[in-house]
Length: 237
Image 1 (cartoon, rainbow, N blue to C red):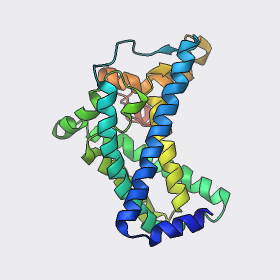
Image 2: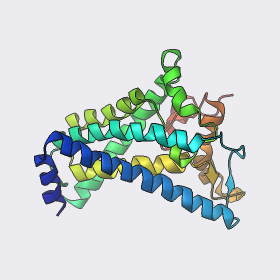
Image 3: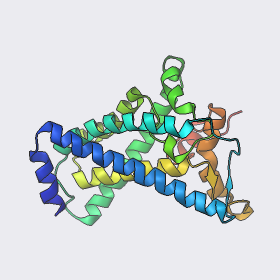
Image 4: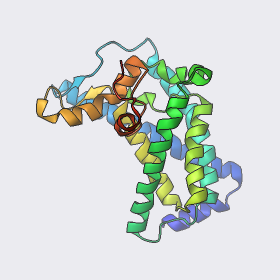
C-alpha cells in the first residue's frame, strides 16, 4: 500500500505533489505540536510536573508561532517533493534497513543542526534567527517558528544525506515525524519529572533547550546537550 500510494504521488504533476506535501507537513506540525501541548497541559492540571520558565507568554505569541510555522511547512513541503524524487525507493528493503537508515540520518541531522544552529547565532545571521528567539518562553508551537532561510538550511542537510546514502521515502517521512516530535518535547517548557532528584539526568535533558531560549548563549544541540559537552558550549555563563 505505501509503495502504490508513493508511486501515485510521484506520477502527479508538480503542483499536485506540492499540495500533498503541504498537507503532510501541516499534519505533522499540527498533530505533534498539538498533541504535546494537550499531553503536558493535562499533566500540569493533574498536578504532575512543572513549568521550567514560569513567565507568561507574550500577547499573541502562539498565533505568531503558528503563522511563521505555516510558512516553514511550505518550505519543508518543497523539499519533501525533492526528496520524493531523490529517494532510492518508496519503502526500505527491510524493517532493519529502514531503522538503520533512520538512525543514521538522525545522527547526521543532529550533528549538522548543532553547527548550523551555532552559525545562526553569529552576528551576520543572528537577525534571521531572532524570529525563533522571540519565543523566550518556548512552546511546542515554537518548533517551526523560524525564518525561511533557516528552514532551507535545515532541509538541505537532509537532501545532502540523500545524495550520499540513498534512502526510502517512508524513512524520510518518519524522519520528519521524529524531528517535529523531538522539537515539540524540547520546546515544551515543561518538566514532566517535576522535582524528582533521582531523575537529574532526564531533567537536564528536558530542560536544556529552554535554557538556550532563556539565555541564548549556550546549549545549541538539537536532541540533547551531548554536542555542547563535546564542543564546549554546555552551560557557559
